[in-house]
Length: 365
Image 1 (cartoon, rainbow, N blue to C red):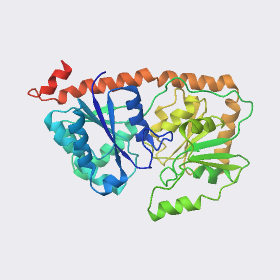
Image 2 (cartoon, rainbow, N blue to C red; image 1 turned 135 degrees about the vertical axis):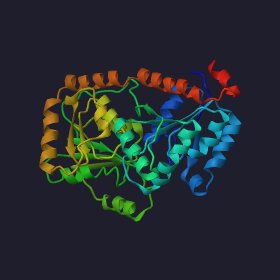
Image 3 (spheres, rainbow, N blue to C red; image 1 turned 90 degrees about the vertical axis):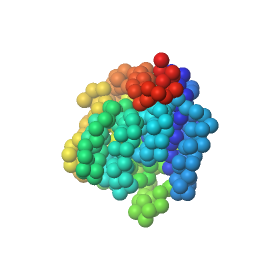
Image 4 (cartoon, rainbow, N blue to C red; image 1 turned 90 degrees about the horizontal axis):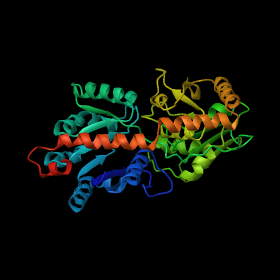
């Protein structure tokens, strides 16, 4: 695919898609597109740029400079692309937002009709996430959202993920997540501290969030010591190595939109426990290739039940061959080739955004 893709994205954590440390799911998704399609042009918009109201200015400059064939955005602020859609630029928006009733989503829930009405193509990353946001969009705007194009997985396997040959696990359970109340990675420490099991939290190296509650969460979780291990600011390579040395992965965020870390754990042969809200549902349950590779528990699960489940997985998937089977099955389900084909399909269908009078029609004929 030789279309010139403009990729505006917001960097919230201080890392960008060129960093060795992956700041979050959106950065990872943009990085994937950038590395897979050589004609991609990333445009970073920092938190400072947003606070100064420069998003539209930066986007317009990049648009005039690069003259893209297509635009792919990965943030809820999609309406700044509407003028380009009306000019005939095919535009795809992918929603990565969690299943949270956050005040910052209200304006987006109201405005998303404008994006679709202008001809934008809207995708979510899971059916569970789509249903959640669709319900809230209808509740806030008093009208159903018509024209959602579908879903696209947040990530894929590049085939190089490894399963270590070790006789002993360094950690009984591991989780990955920035130090954030929504992700709540330190829930794992709190649950396993009363047990005889070790836990490992891999989290962000600094606190880039400034609300009082987020500051308190950061400060309240600086005290952990072994057997509750904490690693801050690891690069992606070391994160994967550390995670692969655990008997089990625990996803502590009950409102995930998809769950890249769940995929990464399974790709490295690590079985997964997913903590859900009271519904018992979770977006990440579509990721495992086999129902035996994961278990969903309520986020208020007792320490004893969580420990018992970890011990069950620790016993069932102790052998290298069994963990390799998890990895191979996951690689097959989430291959890079399948993901690329899906992106190409999305780009192909976006051609229907182009008005017949637009000169851009020539790019798809």
